Length: 113
Length: 113
Image (cartoon, rainbow over the protein chains, first blue to last red):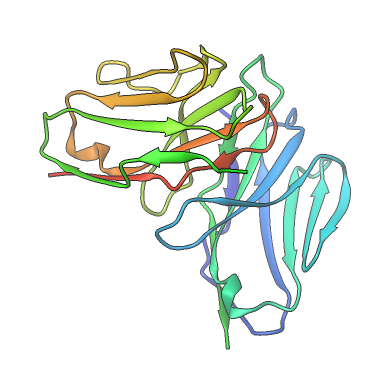
């Protein structure tokens, strides 16, 4: 069974600091990885995706992928109180035609003013 | 570009009643997904359509849940009869193709009493 594991948190960082969110996955065949942000009472919002080993930067967000270690992370630089949300990590495998997206349970981030 | 539309946004029913949810994906997106998200957990895939065909319904409780996407565009998810444990947020998402990034609608919050 494919699993995506995240620390549930809560993770608290002061405003302006770097928030580091981590995720591991069990399916070695997984090829695509996604980070979603979910505010309380809202639906998930896609913020980053990464397919290749290494880093991918988009504004204050950097996604990091290490397929050998089956590890994905999201760094948020200059964290703002508006970044306070639950961050969901998700992975897509290569199994068959379905290529199902498997989500972790999310890490709750609080940025303290 | 319009996002994924869902209705209703909220629904309260008694156990053993039936309920239906509607979803209209982003224009041009061939793949449509229905997820169930229980509080504190990541979304769990119920069913995945590619155009009007089902490609994965392995986690759909088929004794009470059904879904269709007859013309390859909008979709309905039905629960009949509902149980208390069906209380959750039902999310619809769409993507250009299977395995690509998914975009979520606002969700329907179902409460079964």
